[in-house]
Image (cartoon, rainbow, N blue to C red; front, side, top):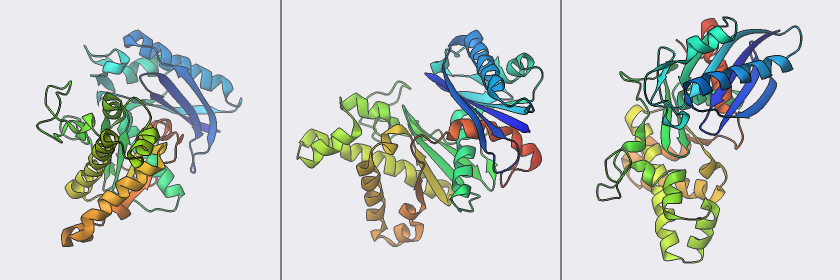
Amino acid sequence: MKIRLGLDIGGTTVHGIAVTAAEPHDLVVETTHLTRKGADGVVGGALEMVAALRASLPADAEIISIGLGVPGVVHGGAVTHAVNLGLDGEPLDLAAAVSLGAGGVTTTVENDVKAATLGGLQWLRDQGFDVHDLALLNVGTGIAAGLLLDGRLRHGSRGMAGEIGHLVHDPTGPLCPCGRRGCLELYASGSGLRRQWAGTAAALFDAAESGDAEAIRIRDELTSGIAQAISILVYSVDVACVLVTGGVVSATPALRDAILARLRADENTSLGRLAGIADRVRWLPAGHPAGALGAALLGAGDEGARSWKW
């Protein structure tokens, strides 16, 4: 049995899975470990996860590829600007280090949101959607998108495609850590919510429904910010589907309803009706391992897996 391993390395946990190499890429093993920081910690933690997954596989299993999704900028298997992993200096050639430690298994590294886009594509196809143009919008601590255009992951000239969190939403807004004011992720993200509200998004919507003026303001900013992010992705690259994921959205049905209502309100113009943005939105189910699954599928491009190309 041929196996692909996928590791989604986040700031808190490493989520690892093993799937069958052949479609439909059935899940064989799944586990999580705490993340270790710094270059040695990231490499060592990844190899520990590989060893743990390997130890849980059937005796006849052959690992043919390892994929890793990591936050930060990825170029040629090397990672930079992954501050949450303690990697903000010299590039770390993570692909080479993990491959060497794993006995020479082919290893691919990708930005975590871009890797999750492949996992999201797999989920959409399993639901019967034939998609070749997709944006996966991740509403997490920040907000960013992975783009799959004409069957290809779009990286951009400097690896920044889909980094929409620092588009300016309100030029008179608060100062962002990036140095600009009013960036989109200050409003449309988990950290943006926590910046202004002590409770959950569900509690925010309940308070707004009860007439709390401050809750209403924050709710409307959160809703309009995420709706704007979705609209930017549709109007800029005309993707067939925007697949939205992230704990804030997944855990709050009222927020999802409000986002769709906001998008549908824009259909009172001829351009809005032509765009039909609300109809392009899908919600990735809570708990779906899109990041780890997408990482596992990074190596599948060698065999022309479904619609993506390399």
